[in-house]
Image (cartoon, rainbow, N blue to C red; front, side):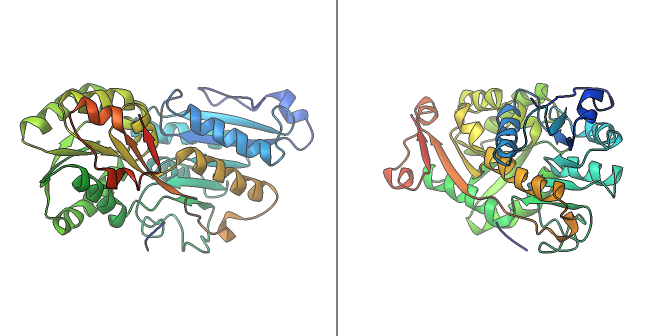
Length: 326
């Protein structure tokens, strides 16, 4: 199937504060973020804003327990176990690895996913999109072959004669493994071929970008995995250094100096998740709550980044952008 104050506890599976437990109707929410605390700030604040709009007041009727994987997928099982041990009313997991770890840790606590992947049914997370049937629902950002193809198409519009794409990924991230399944067909349809360049840790970034340029890539399709998202300014700087046009999955990359991005608005997705949390807290079962899709997808173009690498973006392309950064 396709398309489309809070008490913060950091580290250690500490029990919920006694003062919080003593208050009437105190609700507890766990959040498993795949990114670093700094990189996830906007998303967490959007979630908080969404909860406030629904009447959840800090330190009065809700608490948040936050865990950050910092772009390291291997941390998900430990962090998921910490959150489950707190026995929250609901847990939000912001990646495939995170939701899989949470699902493995509990089949009873309601889980909300925000995943960039193939169909959640194909991943075994839900029985269907309209009726999930278990303890998982959430938001599916349907990063399917059509979305991957759209990003390649956008690059083709702005890079004359584009035939060779460098794909920079984290091979340890399950989202990237899925993207690699879709890219061959999407690239062939546009008359392109591609090379894959791997980075498992930040110290691999420079080699991956330098090798892609040395191997004759004309543009870059950069992973939107938490590893890259958590270090997006560094990633954008390296793309500029090798003077290769690059497209990313989230607007935060373009805001950090990347050439352009196309995908869901993550803060909106986190705010959207608050509504699902509210429904679950009020008694709805995730088994009966349909998986939702993002409210919108957006194309962001950074003209300053284009100027840095000597690229002229056609006016016809700029006219379809949702936002232009100058």
